[in-house]
Length: 154
Ligand SMILES: [Zn+2]
Image (cartoon, rainbow, N blue to C red; front, side, top):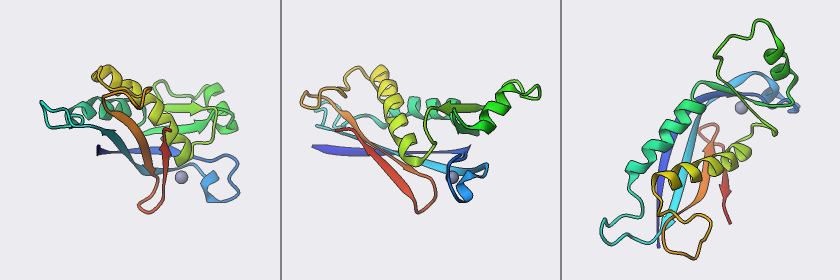
């Protein structure tokens, strides 16, 4: 069994609306995601999964999250922005029904990226761990150079 890892970085703003400290401010991070794929070697290619396939993952993240601002959809600032007449067309906001912590982002990216990789390479068997093929088993999100959270799909 082998594991391969791919790192992807992007810039994004967020705030934690219920945080008692400085994380309640509008601020941003250079995020880094590490995607871990596990599987046996494909005998023909000598690879678990060609890193080439992560190109689609990078594209997905760039399009949806790079230089975006991520809110909890219940955040009053987010609601105010959406209602405002000054809400600029095309402003890159994204919202989820949870606090945009590294933990929640890791789980969300697992869900999205599984689909991106399955579509890219039909051989991935993410929902059947015992079957042949490779699986996206882990997503780690670095919010700062020294703080990260990992979601592992069991
Ligand atoms: Zn932060």
